[in-house]
Image (tube, rainbow, N blue to C red; front, side, top):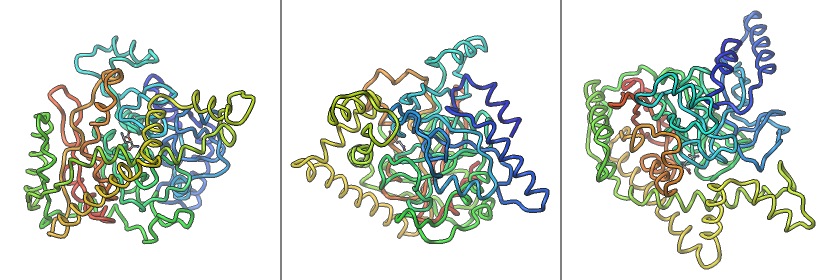
Length: 467
Ligand code: GLN
């Protein structure tokens, strides 16, 4: 724990942590040592981890990296983090993220952008030092988002693993862009209690870690039934670590033709083919599958997610939490607080969400998007029904991009980053991303494996075969 705290201090330039709970961490580590000395201890005993700022941590900074939650310190602990402490893990602090988990680059955080520890091609150490010292981090590589603090911290060895969350790809895309492992489990595998809500029917907790085995160990502790979340599955959590290293011989892996996009990055396409080849060499059978509604997933996601966000974020009114702007009467208070408390990307989502839910538009947008969601789910059911055990796809449309490269562009360009990941959230399925190689520029590339509902075990077996 002390070594990790020192590493965090040396790597302040990455801006991965928004709060370091050093005193608490050392006390937790001492308590852990005491348990071990008594011959006790859980599966994560003494392991220092980071927590995305989305998770409520009792008495500790919890703001989803938004200005509107200024000073908020919850009086309770999220179920996922409570599960981690129950199993002996040590909290190092809270990790930076896109504001309310809206974004794909960690540039929408109120606390500023996070840099990836992977340096841009041809960057000299002097250039890197200057860029790291600069608040804007311009020129450095984005660690992906929204769990960019988590991915950067894990990739930079500032913590052994981290909690993250995935509404449309926020665990898997940052994993791919920083060369680490991330899994979004099946919707309902982890409790959402105490996790700041973005889009409740899509949000799911999950880990970021450096190996498939570490991710399996983390998920086993994070997951499990919770009476406080009615969407959380009552089924017991399997020993995921046991499936790491399990043979993949005889498994059938589907390769969906609809993921082969026009004008696709050739490096990504080549990596995808290589991934299929590796799994074939390991004894799996590769088959073509069709998921015909894939192209509707992204537009439907960008209706469903903002709609649910507009409802969830209505609670930030300046009365109950965090920021309160001075005002003479209540409506004025709401308006002033929300206008100054939310950043531009959040405001954009709230306007879209409120619009698509309004009378006269609900049927045309939200209801239609929900119907598309059913079709997307059915596509997967048909593929799995035909004997496919898992589906192999690219994780991201490109390798990591530089901070600032997309900031001024059309927001839709950023949304396109989610093209391979949102289908999985729309269908509620588990998806694992594992590092699979480097681009010509020396930047990490990942592959995604999509599984049957509650079959994370097959994904861990396959992920280990690729890793
Ligand atoms: N990038 C997507 C969005 O901005 C996904 C975010 C997430 O998974 N939390 O909505």
